[in-house]
Length: 140
Image 1: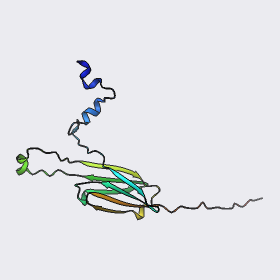
Image 2: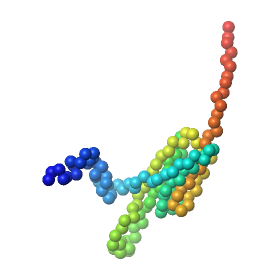
Image 3: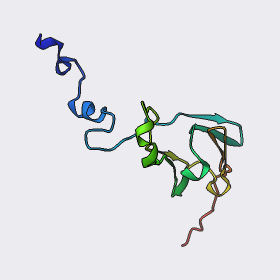
Image 4: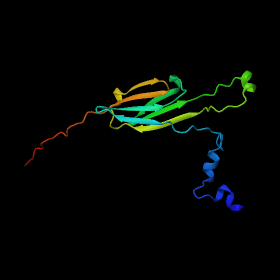
């Protein structure tokens, strides 16, 4: 009977089990990572990020150095008068956050559009630089 407990499973992590609870053991709720696709269009990359159910003003794009941080927050609207009407609630509220390396991207020309639950990012590639050749003068 001892072998039937989840602690005997290979790869079981007690800390992960606490975090798998609906609100997390420490009272925080994290949503799973959102899914992204990245296409190479020659002169640019196009990223498509699934963010269904978000309003445009709940999505933030921040660039720091060579890192693009995409975050989105669902805030739970608590309406006390409707609280007792729910029989079952499955929709989740929380936040998403992912960071992407954009060192090969021209950050000043990034474009974003959000429609039908998909965030589209145009990520123009930096122009390839040819190495500059310099001749040094020899003194003497």
